[in-house]
Length: 131
Image (cartoon, rainbow, N blue to C red; front, side, top):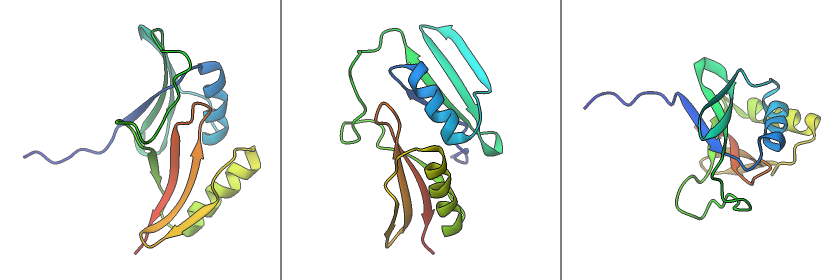
């Protein structure tokens, strides 16, 4: 069996790039690095650490008012790994400074989590694994 490769990119479907792009620009503190329109969609791509990419895709055939729901089959959430509790706290402080609502830091036996929802309700988490 070949080695499992690192995740290179995540592409989230959004209902309106004009709404989602500014949210993610505030979240990531950067503008998109790429724009793609080579299919029946428009995509903005943010460059993250270590060569990872995070894309927002608005499909031409989108179903309009359908919103993300983590209990439906498919994506539950995207988790961003944080090195330690200070890194999770730094994300909390950043979210507060740019006016993005969040869950506050939640402590569990398995680690610390700070959750955010984008304008479509897509769930994001900044997470530190315990131990």
